[in-house]
Image (cartoon, rainbow, N blue to C red):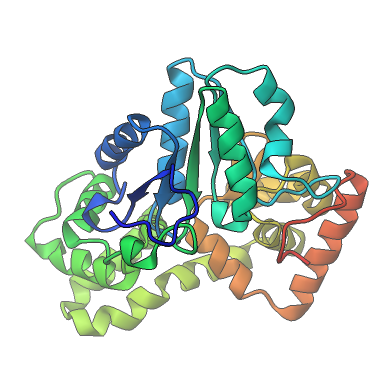
Length: 322
């Protein structure tokens, strides 16, 4: 594997996507085992191809085996600008052979990653980096084909609880066409209510070309319907989480969005608890919500986040929030 443009030459690169994407539990565990057998490693893939899911699996496996794991938000909400090494510096000095995890590492300057690698490996540890294609690895190396149909079929089988029959092959084909390799998009379409609607449509239509538009619109249609069913404050809470990004601290979201409002967005299955904070169940849904926010709602979400950040002592926000 070529890494001509990589400045992290000591870090192995593992692609996700195509036949090797961690699209199901077995696939994910096999790829995780490959990561666990290496030293410091980059998991490289396009958005939605399962990079974060694989990194999370590696974290769980390391923690279950009794190894110390330190997480580093790549572009954190913090009292002041900080580097990944500064974030784990104190813990690192008291931890032997740690696994340090940096997801969304394309948000981190290369020199900061280099400094983190040197410090962690100097203590006999490893760094697991989740990153989208970019300057870290040559683009030719990480060019990903679409998710193959057999992988879509495996995920659909898991969602249905049975192997897709001949009558459901049109559903497989429609899902494969519309998701184009994005595991997050596919998983969002496999939510029970969405899948039932798509399965019924495929059974009635029996024409793949006729399914193109309704399948392509399915995620937006369902997401906007779910948002419309929420009260205004809970819709704003969902918007705030989308704007704040996947690494926002729980205290910030509680202050900016409201605990009860976040709970209602969670009950609507837009959000889920992740440790002490909230995040979208599916990154594809978060991205859709973020892209479709009206200007006035985006402004209100940013204002609420600014007030919440001041209240919680977070004076530095990730790039792109404000």
